[in-house]
Length: 154
Image (tube, rainbow, N blue to C red; front, side, top):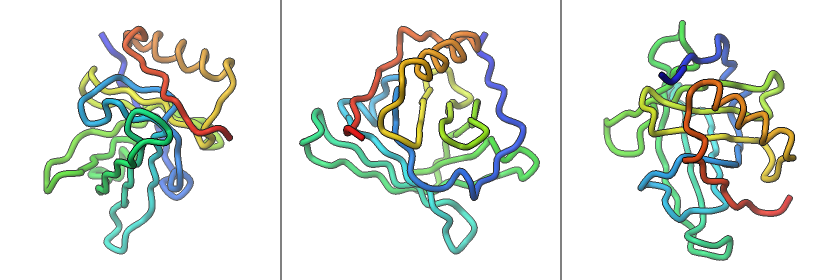
C-alpha cells in the first residue's frame, strides 16, 4: 500500500517559480526527455500557469514544451492540486513532501504510476538524493522504477 499523505501546509507563493526534475517514474508524456524543468506562475484568474520544458534525448536535443494550468480545488487541502494540459481534463498533483525552505519537493498523485522529485537547482548532492529514495521507499513506492533525469550543469 502506497502512502499518499500530502503536506499539511503549502504556501503557493513560495512554491511558484522554477523547479528542476531530478527523478521521475517513466510515463509516455515525458519519455526520452532530459533537462526537464517546471515553471509555476500565478495567472490573473487565480489559477497557476504551468510550463513544463525538456529536451528530447540529449541536452542538445529539440525542446519539448507543454503549457497547462493548475488549481487548488479545496483551499483546506492546498497540497492537493489539479493540473491540466489538455482542455478540461485535470490530473492529480499531490505535494507529498516539501522542504521547509521550498528547495525540494516530492510530487505524486492518486495513482501509484506517477512520482517526481523536484529541486530548485539542477544538481543535488548524493545525500539529498538518498534521502529522497528513503522517503519514497518508506511510503511504499517501488524505487526501481525511478529514472534519474539528466540535467544541465549548474
